[in-house]
Image 1 (cartoon, rainbow, N blue to C red):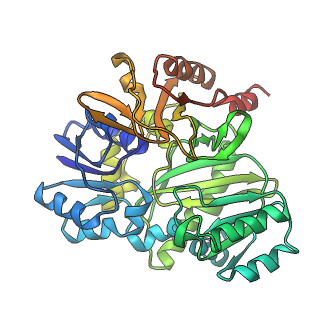
Image 2 (cartoon, one colour):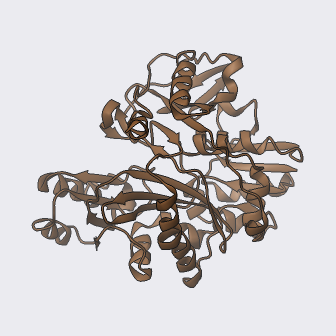
Length: 422
């Protein structure tokens, strides 16, 4: 089988490595991929948002199955375009990917179908938004409606911060047209949990829970990033919480999308907060999270490609989805200055014997040398019998890797370990 994976980050590298385990796979194409994937896939120099060229390539190369991993091409209808040419895909069609593509859509969906989430108001007029903030409870959360590389959310601790966020989104276009509409919502408190799930539009199978670390610096300081590390499973996500989420959030979301004529197939990501009033949805993503994928997929014992095809074919209820009872930790190695500005082009040294533990997010390949080419550069993952050992092993691996201007958090997993020790 010839497989095409659309995307070029650490998430896609994790997906490719897992798909490679299937014996029927003869070739994997990464579109566009990155230099660090060259040993695992054939790189194709087509941008992930260039739907027309992606489809042309897939048809010309007789692709048997495509995995569309990032949010942008999903929202732009990449799955629709490929399926029109008879190429089966993992991922939702454009009309279902809107669950991530529009915060306004997803908030209204939850309100309509009684899915627990933060109270909110929607604005397309900056003056009205600023007027509302004169009396809104503080802290508050300001969200750009559209996609913003996972960074379109600002938590404002003062009224001034809240107003500044609105102006930067709606007037200064910090996130482009994504800020034409904004959501101002209630600030929730409680532990955060990420739950990725496989779904074929009827059945929903949650994967192992995980905990992301969004802030750039230790002890959750610094700017929000796309994620500086993850652990799995998340100790806050108990069996009782999982059952409540299935009953009140997961199944109702799938049912709601069906009732709206937007059947969702693929990976639906639930960003949850376990509030004093029960679990609530912070956000939906229409795809695998990054870097959650780098701890969740290493714990998957069943065949990933078989599960993906079952979501496409509507046979998920008959398909084995089994996870290990071990623990995983992923530490992101980034370029100093991320997420604002950083230099690129530094050579990486990754010992060959640990390459299996490394997911490359931002790299280019020049004359056989692997060079840094992004803010988040590598995800380094270890799997062990318990979380304490997984964290320890992950940092031991990190210390074996070097490149100029590298930085990483030193406390990935610390919060989870504190919970387990209580």
